[in-house]
Length: 115
Image (cartoon, rainbow, N blue to C red):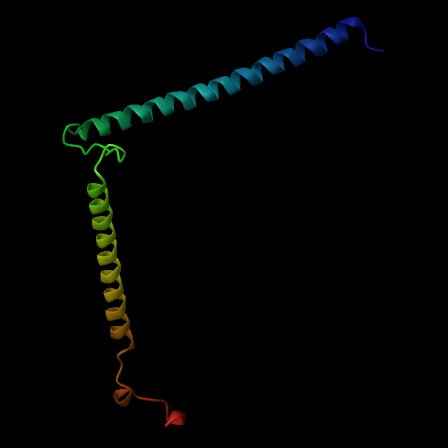
């Protein structure tokens, strides 16, 4: 059986170990927080260079207060732009496919066994 001073030593060791582990974790978290603050300050400095007049930015339109004709016109413009982009992409793909598949088979040198 362990005497009372043995139990006291065990508990002192356990508490000291716990305090050391908590201190190490706190120190690591503090270093990460300092690094995060440093990164945030760099980000703020970079965004300060991009300072834009808030008046020149477009403000969101409230559809409830807008006229129905304006909403329809915006929707149609958006739809037309999407259609134009889709058609341009389609044309690019078709032209690329034609370039890739255009090959003169008569000028190709075939292996002897294939002739």
